[in-house]
Length: 594
Image 1 (spheres, one colour):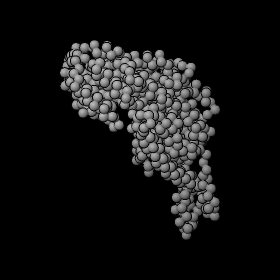
Image 2 (image 1 turned 135 degrees about the vertical axis):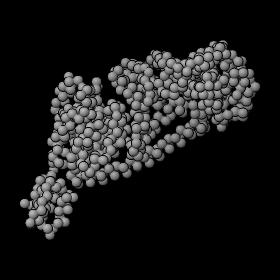
Image 3 (image 1 turned 90 degrees about the horizontal axis):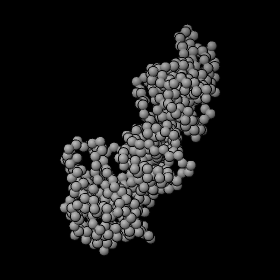
Image 4 (image 1 turned 90 degrees about the vertical axis):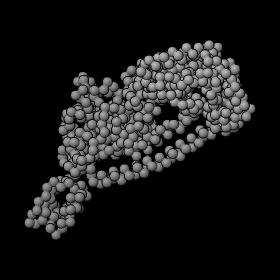
């Protein structure tokens, strides 16, 4: 019986594959020339992978049309101190025999004796690659031999190799490591790649090596040069990396080409940032915004996502399953993008109503902006702890942590300024260098709080080695939002950790701006910041004194609702009220003014 994706495959070819069950493979070898010839011929005719599972006695267990994931075998627990006793031989119709991330995942997950890949191009065998389970620092890891000849593969003595591997497994306390180990690749400085490493860490990815290449011109096919690809391949095997992360945005075709050349999953900076946002999103609003950004990013790249879709079938003159799947995926994405856009529009209108209400009440609006992990959430919590109105002190603090993008959900809280005015403080999502445009677009409804603010507090991590680049990155995003000229205070945070020389350099470069030095965590200079916030938001209220006759006491309750009452006394002629009022209330109560 032939398993897998056999739709559209001619019966004569299926009969040819059925003949494989009659073959006998020598115990010491992974395949024979006869087996190789049959699966290569069929592969070239249907342009799909053929996978054959073989036991240690040389018997054929299954023949599958599709990749190695389609071969269903029982999982073997590593605690059993043995391998599965099964070897997989399969073809790669793209002509590249290098084992893919999917192949390596199957090798380790199924504890295969070995996995063999045959590169097939235009009916001919290009080369052969083989992978074994190995041990690296007591962790199950792949051992690869790539781009070999058919003769070399056939002559590898599997009996001794498997005995050696199982002997190590039985003696050592081996564990399975399913974590992602990444090599970071970039064309910038080491400091910039350190940030990419921190972004990867936020996704629980361990960075095991960094590669920098200085290039004058980006390679349209691979982004980097072919020599650097060979170098990364060698490094990948030595450090057992299973992920490559590029610091710049890659085209879909570049991702596909790199995955074929390197045999592991390849992602770019944008994909990584979107993944972090997807993991950190908590509220319904932020989840919608992140999903929208992911779909917009994925849509033009869906054809070139690499190992996910690169082996779809479909012949000339037909709408094969591969092409049909792509078109269905694209239509679903477009429909979902439309639905999410409508949802965000509803959220935007709700925010607009809330904003109008605060505007009518003459409540100043302050927004915290800044680079990710600059300390915005910590500052917002500190301000609320020392200046929150008594009736809302029970509201919980915003989540704060020493990590990139700890806060994605926008929150607004009220504080009392030193001049007794009520103001709102909004904590926004952090910015980052090369923030994906689709993400900025998706978060526009959230970032509108910045657009309509009366004052921006640009929170800066003054202890960062890349502080000037971070400030400029934030300024670029503010410019994209059209608020670069808004009233702003630069808040130099973490001065307890910062170098004095660096602080002076920042003050010198931005001497035309208002700068306040604080430590939100240590509560240093927060009073000074609050005073500067008062100066940064000129009061639109007028202080007035009224005497309201007892015959018109309904006006007293109106004053309490529409003004900030500073003092209230009960006199013979009526109620004496001193209040800060807006222009409308000031004119409305003129006849009672003292």
